Length: 203
Length: 143
Image 1 (cartoon, rainbow over the protein chains, first blue to last red):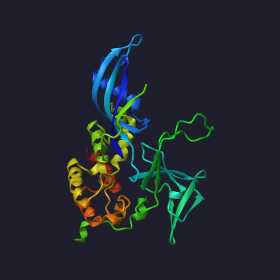
Image 2: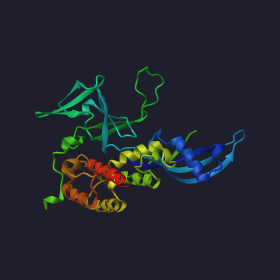
Image 3: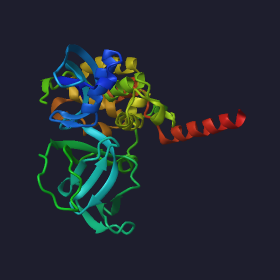
Image 4: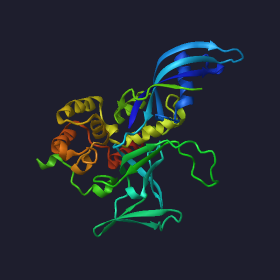
């Protein structure tokens, strides 16, 4: 789910950092610019390394030094078809929302939850809806108690920044991953624990 | 300020490699770390915490390289090998959603699962973490 990307950018090192070794100062400026931000290629997780630094000119009227830097970063960008383990965050009538800790906008829309299912108001939490999967005679609830939920990535989208929003709308998500749990081995891990894993004891 | 993306994909990384990178920067499970660490930021720690709960936390560089070498015998796509290393499936039902059209390609599912069992270390279990916590408290009592 992670990959390396190479970028080239103009970086401004503020005068207060000019006493640090050059690489440290540039890395600090890069971290401030890119860490935890979503680019067109994905969510930037970490600065991997700097390849080259050029310049160091001080522009008139500015106390900071400007450098042209080529560097590599680690981005979180899952590919379509990847299976990822996540935790339950919340659910509503549109579907589920899962979280990875560092990334919280994974949505499983209602059509991608295994059928037959039903959605009912959560008895423990008045604002939420709960999804229940009916398989044969058993009913499986999808909620907080599921330790890990595996989903397969269906799509990644980068919605454009909205110009107007309603007052109570959810905070804007610049990167949204849509997943499915409607297949063998997907969904809460506890659903599949009954299938015996291969163990050495059998020999 | 426009930044130019030279290469959008300069190489895929397994969860293990990212965890290794964070470890080499000084990330650890110590609770005082968030305040003390200057080299690892808070958002990087969230990634670290997530990865420590996955198969990557028990893997080593040798086991991962050996595994991806041996995988070439099984005619798997690179993305599938990456997925298997990240998830460490231990049963048929865990492996099938990763593979694309396994029946048409005649994939040796049993063989792959046996290789996983042999080369990749088992997943970290919640019980193991609890045992570690108990060991730590026992050590404190002793000292």
